[in-house]
Figure (spheres, rainbow over the protein chains, first blue to last red):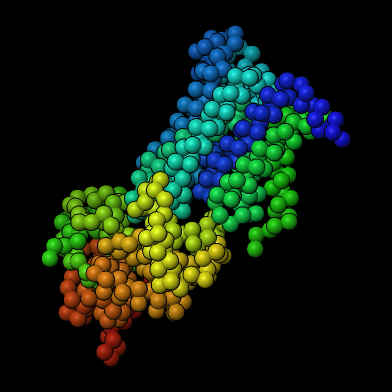
Length: 279
Length: 248
């Protein structure tokens, strides 16, 4: 039994992968609570795919149409793409009075299509695209684990520092304004944190599945807890545990690692929903 | 005595729709004021402009205090929102505390007093979403009370609440006024407006009348406010067309 659980992690790439997955789990599990309580899952999905054009530009600039892209530049480009998606959605909403989901979806497909157009300029783009969509947790290097740890710490620190304004705008924007919260700036800050979580997350589970870590653990935690601090702790725990568990499944059954991690997270939600349905 | 809020030529348009037009009014301190008008008469717009949530298209509204509390109409709180009644009421203190300062003994006392006043103390550990409509409205009002504001704007606080809650809210408004706070309540309840408040501000996009309740609630003013939708039944004036609650 012990060998089944521990032996896989003797390999270096499994250790770095597990470390990265745990960090991403803590980050997405925590930030995702705000996505769930604000009901902005579609926006989170849109930001996750909106990183694509940023990645494409970074690849084109640092690697030209062939060669190896600079991984730091890819992260920076991804972050810019994610923030641009969120900001663009906010601008559409302010100018048109369309419904939230319509404005979000328009920006979503625009960024996705733009990303695919840009990335089709890159030779051998099929390979890059697969890594982008599904993540490449087992190729994470030591310095990337360090970077992930640093970004996770920064996001959690910001979340802690701005916890009250974030809770108030999530509770009710008008009540928040009446309590002196600068609503638009606070929502922008929350968007940037979401984009950071997405960017850190997509290197591990990919842009298609990062939403899984942002939604499934908080959804499970919402059914198990009544207060936000507890929800965030339980959610982070579930998401962090999904990482190594998913890697074990991936190792033993020879299946895709990122998808296995997300499946574990969704399984945790399914079990919770069956055992603790909403009253 | 200086006004706590002053509107000068206050005009708000939503695209083509005029919500408020050229409102001039000085709101005196320490009074309870019914903002009376049918749905769509600009009551909510007046409040959101005063709080700064809505930019005037023309004119201005100046509030002479930053201690202003606003309770929106029929707040739709997500039933799964992860906060207990105690948490929700305590959030009323966060405006004064800012993002970082810890709750002091005084803050806790204000929260306790607010919960007691609205009879939600026994619900402190329940999740907000698990409460009945009336209990939830009382919890939200307790949050507003904990804010310890000088100017309170309540938008249709009696909509969809049970009668014990209605009574509790009426007592609360009176006690706030007695403490020297200014309370403005948006309502379309004619009879109550004339009886329960010091002043009545009759609104139908334009300011129809503003003054002591007894003098303001004349048949003429009410007819202009409700644009013909009032009828006299004995001594009572009755709003004959009761429209669905919506954006007011």
